[in-house]
Image (cartoon, rainbow, N blue to C red; front, top):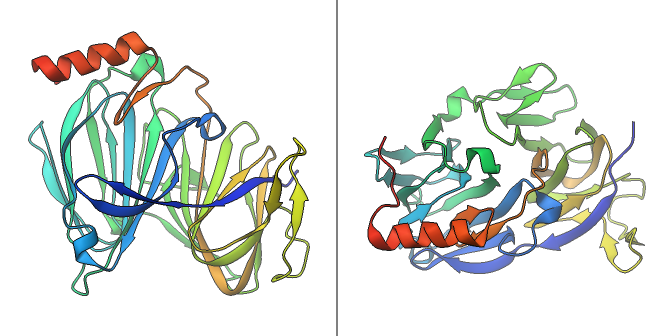
Amino acid sequence: MSIRPVKRIVQSTPTLEGAGVKLNRAFGFGDTTAFDPFLLLDDFRNDRPDDYLAGFPWHPHRGIETITYVLAGTVAHGDSLGNSGMLGAGDVQWMTAGSGIMHQEMPRGDTRGRMHGFQLWANLPSALKMTRPRYQDIAAAAIPEIVEDDGTRMRIICGDFRGRRGAVEGVAADPRYFDISVAPGKRKTLPVEIERHAFAYVFEGAGQFSDASPPFGVLTEKTSPAGDVLVRETAGNRSLVLFDRGDEVRVQAGEEGVRFLLVSGKPIKEPVAWHGPIVMNTRDELQQAVNELRNGTFIRPA
């Protein structure tokens, strides 16, 4: 077994999206080869309603899957197929945009004005770009949770872990998507298949990743395999940890513990032509989608 070394740790970037929602972007809208099959991860966490209530009004998607995971507050959603509903704390919506859909997402916050959630975009391979759109709406109570003897808690959103399988099924990239909490001072080793790209996103506490050998609190730096990047192996709030190859991820929790998303998927290894929420393989396919938006033929008949 080999522990995955850390390629890099970066802080998410404050970004304005939708009709003026303030959020933090962990990655996206650049060269996402290292994250393939994932394209983007946004952390929409805020306790000021004026910073998120404008929401994400009607907009198109094609060629991708969007995964919305709500931790606090609510998100009202609706689409061009007539679907509508409300996501609450702990709920997940996995939307396969496929051939095309128009939808909106409007965050509302909780009784104290807090809103927190994540949206992850997963690419679709060329053979499934134009598949029929579909939803998988998963209530919080339907998401399996494991509590281990050392206090580690894991919500299995998608994929399997030690015989338990998440509620989301039939996703093209066959991803693993876990919400993991490691108790203060504990060290945890988690399996990740070697052929997958993998990353962690820390959103509570702090932890040391990779071999986690130095005492916690001691800043460790090392040169990347390319010899040109210094890697800080301690990751705190809103930190993205990109892993290199290996079949295990190890984390040493700090004195307040650490909570993070651990996401992995099999690379698609296909060209990406990207314009906002539309992701195809070629510029011609992208132009076709834009033309269809203009002439009203973007939504395909059921």
